Every structure is written in structure tokens, then in C-alpha cells.
Length: 207
Image 1 (cartoon, one colour):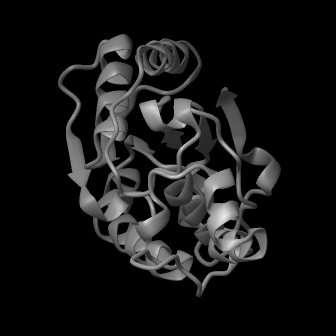
Image 2: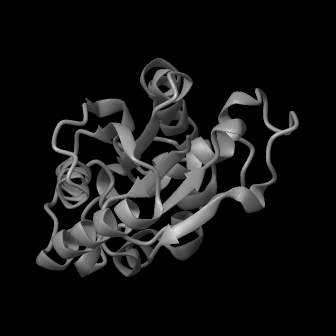
């Protein structure tokens, strides 16, 4: 049974082009519609979900709720985890990319975005955020997969990139309310590259 990694639907700050991080804006009406549509599509094309894990931020939790409602699975257990929150961005949260470039310069903006050991003031490095995500992965998420259930994780772009990277897959750029399905064999096979199914077996199911 597969692992499904879904990004939350459109939030008000996504709509405005603002960097969100650990801030907690709600979904837009368009985002609510996206989440319901993603649930209907997953019900048609994916496995029956047996367990759900989300971050504790509203945009992820509401997306998961709307997806489950659309799949008509109201009794599925949902684990809510602060460890799955998006990377904290400190002083740049709430700003647009252009505003960050103007205030700190484009090179610094790219360094904060791409350097695993760099972070905006008051923010979190990519490396630290990934360690946090993976602590939840090992402690809370794997058990359901090993029990034979299909597991849906509704979280954030950074969370999903970290889990895919941990499994040996290239990063995926997911739009709002889109997801990737990872075969269970890729989770069970051990360290990245240890006879895992190739990266092409990760399929984007919704956009």
C-alpha cells in the first residue's frame, strides 16, 4: 500500500505571494475547493486511506479534513504533529520574495532559500527543519505503513521534499493540493539506493 504525500491547498498568503513558514493563514475559498477536488480525485484514482498525518497548521489540517470529507472517510484516524510544520522563516515570514530581495539582496535571499545551514534571523535552517520532519516520520508515520495501511500525509512543500529525499527520490515541486504516491517497497527497502523502485515510480496524481 502506498504512502501519499500531499501539499496543503491554497492559503491567503499563497494567494498574496507571501512567504508563509510557520505562520498560520487560513485557506482561501479557492483552496477549500482545491482540497475537496483533490479528495475526490484521490478517492477515484488512489488507494483507500487508512491513516492520516498532518501538521498542526490550519492550512494543512483543513486540507486534510476536506479531503477526507470528499473521500467519505470520516472515521479515519488523524495524527496532528507540530513537528511537521513548515520551516520557520523568522523575519521574512509574511514578506513577498520581491520585498526580501529589496531589503537583503537577491544573493542573500537565495542563500536563505538553498543553503542547508543558513537561515533568516529568527528562522530555522533547512537542515534543522529536515531533522524535525524526519523525527516525526520515524516516530509516528512509518508504523502505519508497516501495518499495511495506506497513509496520507498532508503537510508542506519543505516537509514533502525532506521525506522524498530521505527515501532517495529527487525533490518534487508540488502545487497547492497536489500529491505524490510512493510505493511501499520504497519505504521498506532500507537506505536510499538499496534496491528501491526507481524515482520514476513516484507519480504525481493531482495538480
